[in-house]
Length: 151
Image (tube, rainbow, N blue to C red; front, side, top):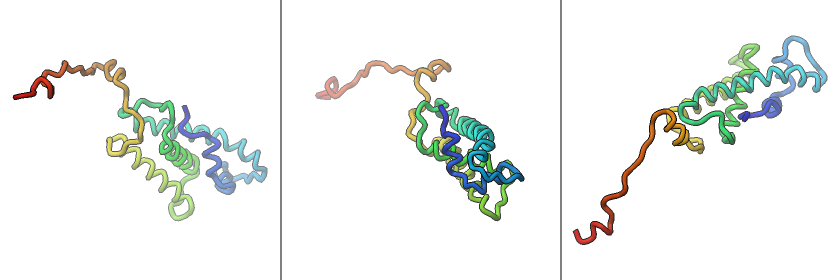
């Protein structure tokens, strides 16, 4: 399941930025501009999802069945950065916002991977752990309040 859609990413881009990403030729027709940038956006979204999975694979079963909202947000930020960085990022201008959002996403994902932040998804299931050679069982409780009454 995709963490974000191409449409969500393209909705976050302004028309002038689309033309910067596409290249030197200015495309005035919006439909034509969308048609040209869509394959680039699809690749950017796929790369963003792979990057997120790379950070979270040891802690969570990825890809997520139901994408947490925070992962959707950061997937869009990473995908936008992937698109904009195709032509290079000018840190002194408007592109710096994309770099800042990308760095925030990576910082967040690093903290999630380290276990410092919880995204509200259950960790890898017990069955997965058992398949990898780890399982845990406990014996019946020997001492209870009832059995210890009077001691």
